Image (cartoon, rainbow, N blue to C red; front, side):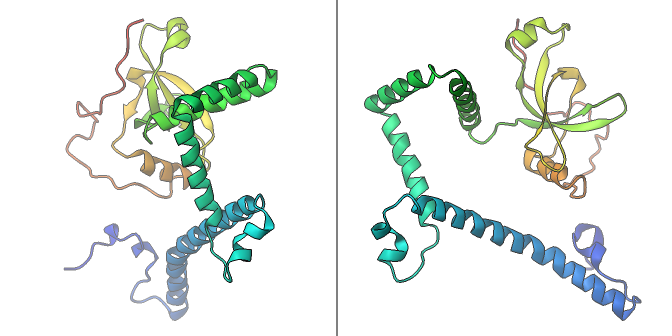
Length: 244
């Protein structure tokens, strides 16, 4: 069976049968680059991260306890293992009564520092919110008209809007909190409070949407053109609003 070129991610780089030898070699080179570059960059960044953690953590150890001193060969990842074990032990300590008492004592001390307490409390709330979501901080991927009518932007749906923002917003419609990421760095962006009716939920996953944003639209997620082209009644459910 002849493969469908539309389903082959590398087919756009393959030369035609009548292409010249130079064009074919150039295309083969670009195809090899597309295959090898992500692998090489991933290996390089992973190795750099492990070596950075190793160098930073090992610097706190006495020289006689350095892995290079105890072993005749280099063992990569020692620092990363120490970090994982240390965080696990810290979590086990703070999970018991004595650990919680020590933690509360430390937090009361931090609360007396005007600038430090603001930074600490903000970071603590962010980490608690993200971790409590079990890796599902973003519920869905949506489409809104932004920055004006007729232009559309991808957003990540976080949760329904609550509290003072919902109470004092000059609208009777329930609002949804969404995060509008920037390209090519999706870790920065804008927090928007959007009426529920103005959000069109997409079928793509959060990971696929992140790839689309990072690549500036070059990496399109797979999409099955179904019979419901208008996005009718099969839209995923948005966060349910609560009464004011």
